[in-house]
Image: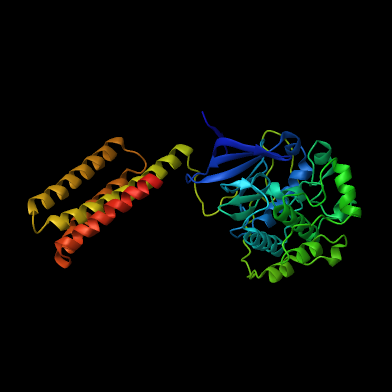
Length: 408
């Protein structure tokens, strides 16, 4: 049986990181999302959770096609979790490098970086493993989480905040991770994508960190249009690095003002744990949902009904085309087609009434509209188009329907 966490149905485990395990899940509306369940040692740190709760309020402001938006957060429960947009693809660290569409990757990452910094969010752990490649487009995941959970107790429990070779020198030396540190990570990530090599080499973490602080990055093989920008992004001095907006300007990315979206919800206390999570501002927030939470079974029923209505509409159009094409030469065939379709829809509506499910009323209305639409469309088409044209339309609709069926 599948596991439920709050209103989400966990389908399968996608992976695990330093702070939590990520699951593919269904939301109450039947859509796929990614649910990151925090590890027990992270969940036990009330200070880290409080900081994450405050950070989530800011993370919600980040939007755009190149970031996996935070959709929900529930941190005052026994198993705290975050919910983000599910990105189907592979991380940059797992795709063939050098990347063929390097300019597309560079502009997408620059736009994501500008979106985060514009909302006041610092990623702090930008690296190839946190860049998902989806149909050639980069999507940045896990932004803000490492920065929010950077506390002594969490780190001491085993979570590594950041990755040597992609962490900025000032962070490795104990300094604060600001927007300039993200720009450094952006440069290192693009250098890896352009050359297929880590810009500061491999080996023990201490050795890589030493090279980051004291050596120049390996940019051999980076295209000429990109190398000067990466060299500046990887400067040891944070003040010498360009801002995210400057990077966008140099790559020709138009940065537009993004709407700030922020929703504050009641303070929560972890149920069953007895701990007060320092005046959390985030509690089980879902966009565009009010009232009672729907069960996963109802979500699946709604999804099935949505698919059924699409088939109903497509069948009605196809039957109407066939009936209209045969009205003039074979009116009996046209009448038979419409009668058969109507009978099938009426039987379907009868099953819906018998089952008395939560979507019965809408299903019966949709069936009635499908029958009326098919008859009306057939009459209208036969009045305005000739039989050969209608036959051509019907054949085209059949071919398109088969292509859609097999590709789906």
